[in-house]
Image (cartoon, rainbow over all chains, first blue to last red; front, side):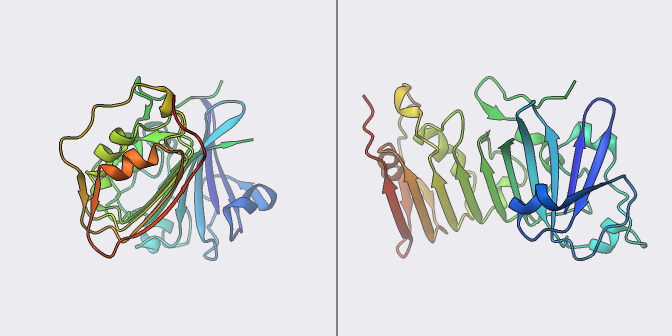
Length: 108
Length: 139
């Protein structure tokens, strides 16, 4: 699982192994951009804080259609940039082509 | 300070920002708690759609107009998307029903306004309908 969060000053990618999105909070861990992705991860969640009490969440199940391109040759996440996150919820990369997605507000 | 993603004046989330308005392989889409306008480059290819607990609620006619942009829709599930619109004036009625020719499964769990939704929807023979309405009649 991958979670991308940002505020004005920081872009955070959180990675964790989860089979169900509900398990996310309990099993995730933090990482930084460039950390290798585990090929067993089944989902990506890109979160954007919306208020103190809620988050906007986007779930994109893995694998993508072209995972090697997305992950890079060394399995390193390369394509999610902070500039993209500001412009878009979700990957601003034509190679990232989700087949399923969820968008919603999650109340903490 | 945290950036916020604001809704438009109509209550719709700015859906053009999703996937940079580019998700050519997206077939299954769900959204919850927010109201998304499906008039996007990727909306027309959606096969399976689930909507839950939208705030603000959809007016039935408003949602039908959104769904008319999804001609390939095969499965639709709605959970409490009209619940508050019973108190509003609502959108104008449709002159002709919305036709979803590929719809095979429709589930609606909502208030009695779901009837207004279903009354303006045309599906082909063989579509499965599961309807559960709450005991709530708008004034």
